[in-house]
Every structure is written in structure tokens, then in C-alpha cells.
Image 1 (tube, protein in one colour):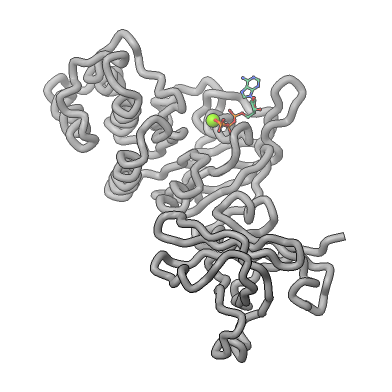
Image 2 (cartoon, protein in one colour; image 1 turned 90 degrees about the horizontal axis):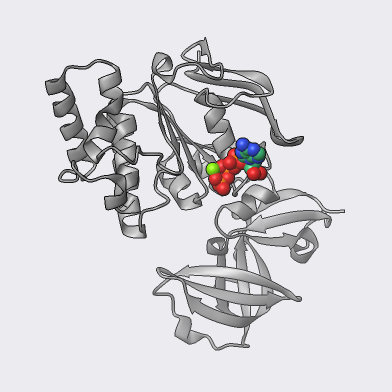
Length: 341
Ligand SMILES: Nc1ncnc2c1ncn2[C@@H]1O[C@H](COP(=O)(O)OP(=O)(O)OP(=O)(O)O)[C@@H](O)[C@H]1O
Ligand SMILES: [Mg+2]
């Protein structure tokens, strides 16, 4: 049986449905990310799983036991890091982290050892005596994470635990969380609206929109085979084009292709012309700019702008703006999204 089972869970606030029949299973030791735009219901779902919010319909089971709102979290051994960290303002970092262990009546020397260990792992050793207001947002988030991890929970619920840390620290914190999660084998449900974070950390990603699951799958499935326009739009960049533009047999179909699957070549480049694995289009180069490790070109094809990404190092200087160019769209990278009316 799955470690977490969410069956037909529904929730409304003031007559507005924010979760619509959510069904989701999470396996023991799995790292599942809930990804979706602000207001799509991520925190609400997490709070229902933790037993902090009552659902209007459906059931949640953790370790085979039904979660009912108000049930003591301790009984279920669930660790949660809230979006707002929710540290006790009148307790020091040390006391915040030790709180759950004290409640569990662990002996003081053991508490000291476990708190010091987790503080060292999370690089907040030295902050023991600091109160929350004496720490940066990122440090407070790590204290909140330490507080959740120190009790060695079976299930870890993380609600945007990295939102307050800068890009560099965020990167190392991601691998730290993933590392600890793997080492301790903790089933984890992680919430973010950062697509990159979801892609690099998760065993499985669940995409939510307006309280509904749009798609779930491994990161590469979500990235390479989006089930619909919402998912395609939400993760990375995509070019959407009518099938008619490519001369497809079914002209009413809409297709999409990622910018990195389009090649930009000179109009007179003969070598590419016989390439049967790609659709060819002619267009006008309207823009070229650096995105970091890639160079992005914008090419206007019959009034539609297509984005093309090439790795930095590509001979951008061979091209001039307003030049007529040829685009090669890898056939096997085309996704068909559905019939347009
Ligand atoms: N206690 C509440 N009372 C009324 N409405 C609520 C309550 N909690 C959440 N909502 C509404 O439910 C919807 C989902 O909220 P939720 O906090 O789950 O979104 P979220 O996906 O976590 O968003 P974010 O990424 O901004 O944190 C929102 O429209 C929110 O305004
Ligand atoms: Mg939220």
C-alpha cells in the first residue's frame, strides 16, 4: 500500500472550490513535488494531508491510518515546514529545533546531540542562541527545516522551504534537502512554484492548476511530454504552432516544440536540406540575445515568432538581423496538443 493515499479530496472556501477531487498516491521514500501557480491549492492540500485542515470530501491515509483534522501530528510522525516558517518567536534557534524532542520526552543529553548534529548538517551551527528576529530569512528557513527533520519523521511536508534564500544558497539547499531525504529514506511532499526546483529535486512532479491535477510524472516526462497546453506553458519555454504551418495532414492540430529542438541555419545551407528528420521553415531573424549558457534567436515565420535556443558558442556572428533564415524543427521533438477549432 502507498505511504500516502489521497482519495477524492475536495475543499471549498466561502463557496469557491479550491481543490477538485484530488487523487494522488505517494510511495514510501518517494520525493513528490506539487508544482503550480500561486493560489492553485498547494498549501491547502498539504495542510489537509497534515491534518491541519478538514477536507469537504474524500479521505487521506498516511501509513494506512486515516488522517482526520485535529489529529495529533505526533501520532502520525509527520514533519512539516510551513511557507511562513512559523518559528516560535520567543524561543532561540536551539530551543525551536529541540521543541519536538522535548515533547517526545527525549533525555537532555540526547536532545543536545541530535540538535547539534542537525544544525551542523544544515550549516546553522553557531546560531543556537539567536532568536528568529536575529536571523536572516534563509537561516530561519533552515531552522524550520531542522526542527522538522530532527524528530526523524516518516513523512515530511515542505511548503516552499527555500523561498527566502538567495539563488546560490538555494542551489546548495536543494541538494542538501534531497541528500538528507535520500539518506533517511523519508517520504517527502514538497511544494514549490519554481519549475527548475521541481525538475532537479523530484522523483515525481504533480502539476496543479486551479485545484486540479493537470499531469503527474517523472521530471523528464513532464518536460518532454506535456499532457496539455497548461503544462507545456508552465514548464520551460515552448513554441506553439498550428499544424497547417508545417503542412501536417491534419491542419487543425496544434503542435508545440521547445526552442532547443529547433536549429537555425543559413538559408543557402545545402547540407541540411535533405534532412528528413526535421520540418523546414523559412523566416526572418528578428532578434538575437544571450540567455546565459544559451543564445536565443527570435524568428518570424508567417507572422508568428518562433524562439530558437542554441548553446552559447554557436556562431551568432554569422547572422545579421532581418536576414532570411531556415529553421529545422526536429520531428521527433514535436508534441501534438490537440485539435484546434
Ligand atoms: N483559510 C482560507 N480562507 C479562505 N480562502 C482560503 C483560505 N486558505 C486558502 N484560501 C484560498 O484558497 C486558494 C488556494 O490557496 P493555497 O494557499 O492553497 O494556494 P497555494 O497554491 O499554496 O498558493 P501560493 O503559491 O501563493 O502559496 C486561494 O485562492 C486562497 O485564497
Ligand atoms: Mg502556498
